[in-house]
Image (cartoon, rainbow, N blue to C red; front, top):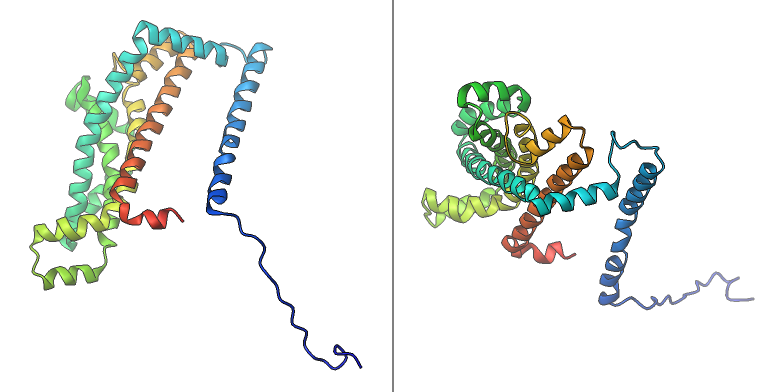
Length: 281
């Protein structure tokens, strides 16, 4: 009688195969990173073919080659660089004011229930207002200069920072507050050493969101009563059916948004070094 017939269990030793080295594991995603560019390049090629064959009329959308030529001409004439400088200045000023307001109001609302009851309902009502609905009022209140444009950007920026910072403050571990009371930290020291570091990851998320919203608000602001900037260049091109200039302006908006987001991500990596091990997994 065989061993199998007696019901004796048969033990088989399974040895794991060779594991790829960490360097090989890290090399695989990087080697395939170029694949992310395939679909955009295919889209551009299809766009160019449709324009060259007449399927996509020039009056509806200029060909990529025409857009590239127009971009070079605008850079050489200084028109594009001047427009970028004006728009960037508006965003920076509006972002600085709106960022300070958003974080400050989040501290007031996040550190006490009385502050939350006073600030949060107003912020929730204001963030539901459409930008186009505020433009007539801002023009009546502040004129047609730079002030309404900057204020629109500041207002748009404040809401993502407020919401994320508020959530970050309320998400701080209560045990840390008990430790602060034990070591007798003052209110200022509590905010500086406990609240702000604990809320920093969420605040940086709000910072990235607010930068994206800032460029969207600027597009709206520069479409009305502007005499300089990317929005003015796009609006002026619309009057003359210059779709090539419009596309150049939109591409610049996108590039500036990606650039500012990359800067915030760099700041996030530097500020959250204590999470580097977690992020690297």
